[in-house]
Length: 342
Image (cartoon, rainbow, N blue to C red; front, side, top):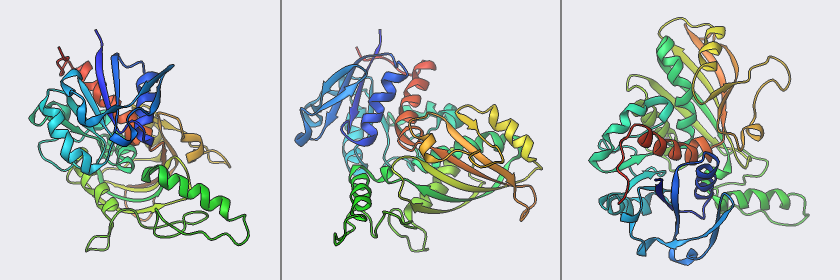
């Protein structure tokens, strides 16, 4: 007997990827229930070779489902996740609504799968921020080998992380560049995104950092180790899919470049592509559609003792969201932590 899976926000970028990942990984689902807001009820989405019609979130009986993959934003999750969880359906939420709740596990299965056992307190499990997920997958094996002290990260985040409207804005602005006299007016972003870089994601905080940057700090500490010091600068770049990160890591113990390569080659979910030649690295274009998190440009950081620098790239809609959510569900099943709906 298989499982029953509801997907809230099934018509969005991440929701559609969740459906794709469930199918590609042959998740043991007997039934899949795509959910949408009332205005999108009846919209069609693809699940493998099937076409499914979206159901009304407000009218669905979630006791019929074992899992709810929630990808409809923080406000919707705050309202609906506790209600859904109370029916016995386990919620795996992709928003930031529950990540910092002490009673809600924040999980990246390759990094802290054991922490998933705490999910019964609220029957909710949180997915980390997309930029955090790919970072901690790489930091985890290195931390076990040489103990990470400090991380300095600059992100180059694709517009898909801001939703379909953001992708449309990049597309229209890019086309507009080649139409004389056509105005380019930013709507989704504070400044033009085409042929530009915007060093600003999410709201500014009092200390000058943005909330996106704070999320990376807080989530890395919760998932990996509260002792690690993290500072981040997050930028939006004119890329449709795939987040990139330039990362400098300071370790407590000595670690060579070759040792780091060998450790990462053995790490789950990580693929090392690190040739010191033109094209011997991975860019977002190659990472799009791939499940792995790629590491390139591994080299010594001579500005600190026991330092390394590297380049990390991943599909933010997959490992940063949809894939990670499905992997969490798989973890619950593999560890026999979930009772199927009757």
